[in-house]
Length: 360
Image (cartoon, rainbow, N blue to C red; front, side, top):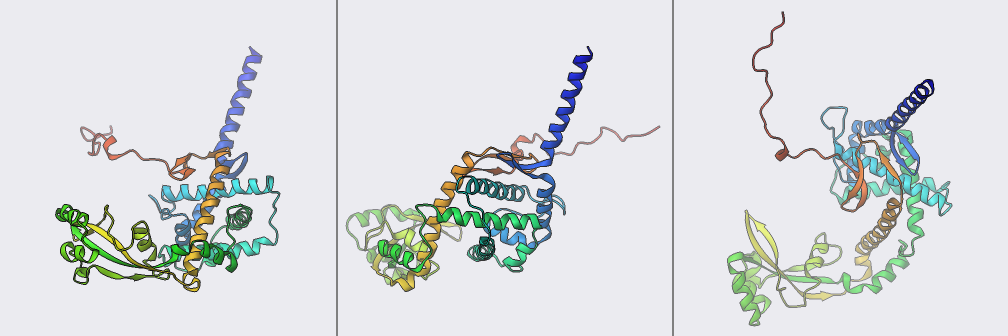
């Protein structure tokens, strides 16, 4: 009986110790951990700094604003930051264990690279952050800042080792441009904004061989109809270039596509036809910025593929208060806890006592 009691006591003590250990672990990747205390300190630093919130929103779109109370954060922000820490730990283990990389002098370069990346992300997302990226890093806790700079150094190293990575050098960009020259043509387009009720008639006239100009003049309600739909020419330096290229790249010159896009004006939906009418080569000097953006996107895609492979093979545990490790739209990630939908709530009235309470 004493032996059974002793074993029970030992089991109880172990359960308590395991419980305390799990509570103190914020995130764990392959046995390496960050404590809940440290993560909460990092989340507090984010909550206390609007500058840091802004730049983090740029690189990891989520709400880092306060949650239900002044000292809390929205669940999406907590999950997003926890996920960044998980990714950093997983990559750290991979490059050290598999590639035997230990960053030393690279950390200075990595810090400058991280600041530049945060600045560019804020600009591309049209965020006017109250302060600089350097000030955002300064608002982090020392442990937090060191981890992010280290993660940047290791990510840069990992990307440089990928066979699919294109170096961001002038010669490499020029080589990529030469191989994809037609993707950077200056494109002139004509459009036809057609009421839904006239789409069938538009298609019939199109099938009979009506020209782009004739179709636009007859059916389009856009102001360009009087010009035969002529809308303008767009080169790689135009802010609209990506959209114009995407909307017209699969369409033959001088024709409207058979399947239109849609657009809405004053609450009314229209069929939108976009026809490329002229494509001319753009000199590399004018297309270089777009080429650089495209190459960066390709490199990021390749890096994300490797990152997802690393995460797929990692053993990850997350404090339920921070989120849960699960499958998101782009792979394994820390997912914010789901709240019950309104349809699951059976009533919206406040519970009240049937009569006033009285105390004797």
